[in-house]
Image 1 (cartoon, rainbow, N blue to C red):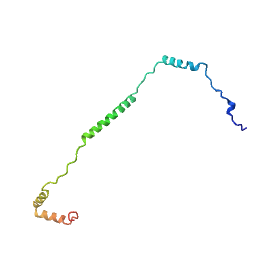
Image 2: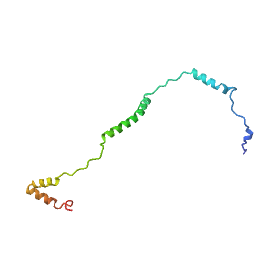
Image 3: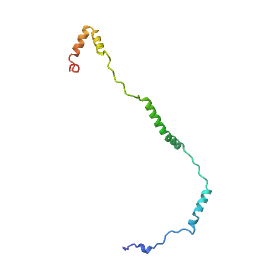
Image 4: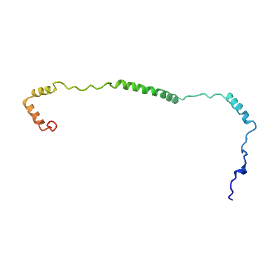
Length: 118
């Protein structure tokens, strides 16, 4: 029962049909239905309106955040730390104001310090 299917036997006849004049009256029928039907009211849900506001405010929020950041971040180059004049003299004066026992303790404590005695 192996029979080859042959398209030539089918022919070019359309298997579906429409009533006579259907396409001629189609536009008039559609326009008549549109005019007779009542428009459906558009009901906006609160979630959609809230989402719309958020989408509108998002760019403004980004601009506001950028402005706040620009105002809060200090501008300009940082000032270089200037060495205090006479800082070693102040340390020497403080050392001289110590008692003899305190001076000898400091000398003995820092005598073996690896970082000071390099």
